[in-house]
Length: 180
Image (cartoon, rainbow, N blue to C red; front, top):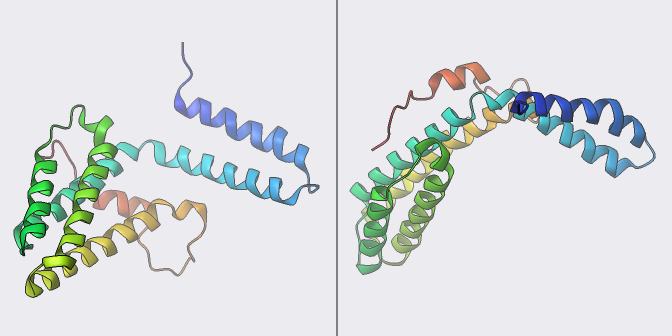
């Protein structure tokens, strides 16, 4: 029987707190600091594990929404048209096992979106550039806030940051059955 991921994380956390950190003591400041950072990441991973798949699917869902909006709004010369065609083709690529491949699909979409950004800079129509710029900034703002909440357990955010709670952020994620 294989130990669960939670049990494995618990074992790593216990090893860090009961053996490694005490053995380091204060003699090696950098090693102690890095071990503490590692321990923090292990604790956050344990917290996020249950929600990771849903979070990744929501990231993909939002990126696909941005991609569709860009396809609809972007216009320009040959370079922009080619970038739009690449993004359209990327959206149509089969995903295989959706939950396993969400990261790969997200990376492909983000690369194709980046291509549109560069193409629009080169030969995009001015009005279209303004619209796509606004779409990208709005998407980036929402993504950055969600990511800040996702990592808020690391303790980098001030209590008065105004961010939603972790549970509120999770509740706001779309329930995804399939993304077409």
